[in-house]
View (cartoon, rainbow, N blue to C red):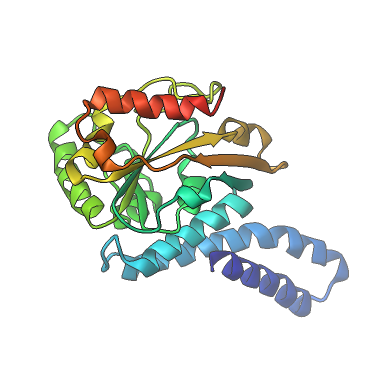
Length: 261
């Protein structure tokens, strides 16, 4: 939807200016300036939609379809990512689920949000929740804010996240606790505390290996980056419910890194 609106506005901008300012040599100017103008329009369009988003629950299907549409648009036309997926059939379309992924770029959430057609959100640092537009958007999606300066704030958010997870919200978690290395695509660290949601909400676990995100900032904006997401088979709750969180962490660590061997 967002992509269609973008191109409709872009084409209208070029055509209307070409009609009202009928100077042939200015047409390339309208074509070039149309792209950033259309981007600004889309940002405004998204912001206006916050009016209804703030009044619905995070599991609301139209809102999640809207988020999926935004992610697709940003991937293709802003950060220039083409997402290739191996194991898409392993993604449960409903039921309780928590997803774990290696973390190498601030842009990782964008292709991951495109990957999932179901209600999906993230666990960003509290600083991210203060970013203009993005912070509000994540809040409407039910994101769990990780406040490293206040365990109490994080615990309060965790209680709400567990409720959402029980209702079927898929939380994408980067268990490394931040970007530890931008050059090594493998998972290089692990925080056992990152497994509270599946343990408390009794969700299944899905592991995704994300490849080539380290190349996006090197190739943008002139070259497209092909990013590959490998979706591994679901780990059922009954398979890990009796394990210590350190053992679950090691299991996820091994699954992700095996894909890079």
